[in-house]
Amino acid sequence: MFSYFETPLLAEFRRMEQEFDDLFETWAPWSGGIRSLPSGTFPAVNVGSTPDAVTVYLFAPAVDPKSFEVSLQENVLSVSGKRELATETEATYYRQERFGGTFRRIVTLPEDADPDKVEATYRDGILQISVRRRESAKARQIEIH
Amino acid sequence: MSTETQVTQSKGDGSAVAESRRAGASESVLRPPVDIYETAEGITLQADMPGVAKDRLNVRVEGNNLLVEGSIGVAPQEQMTALYADVRSTVYRRRFALSNELQTDQIDARLKDGVLTVTIPKRAELRPRRIEIKS
Image 1 (tube, rainbow over the protein chains, first blue to last red):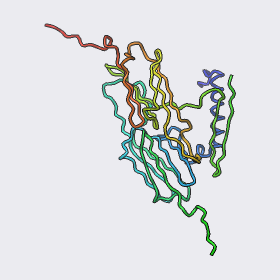
Image 2 (image 1 turned 45 degrees about the horizontal axis):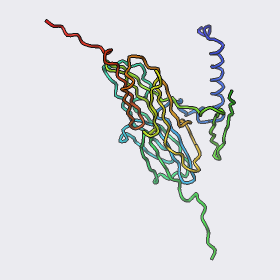
Image 3 (image 1 turned 180 degrees about the vertical axis):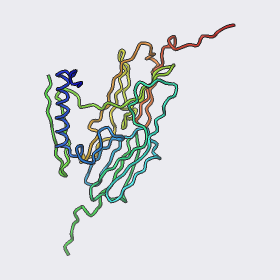
Image 4 (image 1 turned 90 degrees about the vertical axis):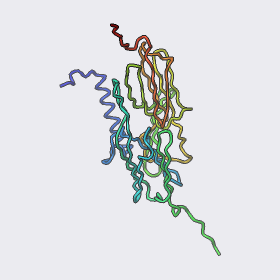
């Protein structure tokens, strides 16, 4: 019923939004995947890969580092924690966009991720978790006697 | 006039990173989520900018606007390819229009663990004042 108020410009934006969604579903299977989380889930996650290790970045500002629980089982990395937001009592809030509460993100790592070689550091609000790859994947020189 | 090109790179393991670049303009920018509240003393703004350290933070008042800018200092390692990316930019930026009753030359800005807290007091003569009743 409210489409009566929609100007041609708004209709154009809606069409573009649809196109972007379709585009991302094809080119970025993770965003249309059946287990994918809506964009904007806290904390945001980036995963980078080098020949030696896989590094997971969680964008989690103002989280007490002690509240992070990081576990790696098989090759599934799970990070959970809690962010407490102090709400002022004698104040009028105009915007409350920041996330507060408990969270959990799960990342599936490549098969050769070594669960015994995990390092995590928290700096400037980013939790960086590096997982080294298993050595056996690398080529080995064979000696001829 | 600007031209827009879409560049899609395909990594060996099947994941893809799509970058959109507009020639002559800057890359896409992250809009940090904020909490803003007002008390009798002034206005406080808290912005989530994970990855930003003090030396890459820029907070300034331009005319009647508060401009908050910061860039992420985590350098991607050599030969690193992206397997998954929620965050596709390294720059935060957001602008807020201020009102005249704020004392912008007494801005206080703090950064801790990626959260920026900006406090701007109201001009002293405009704060609510109790009126004493003399008997």
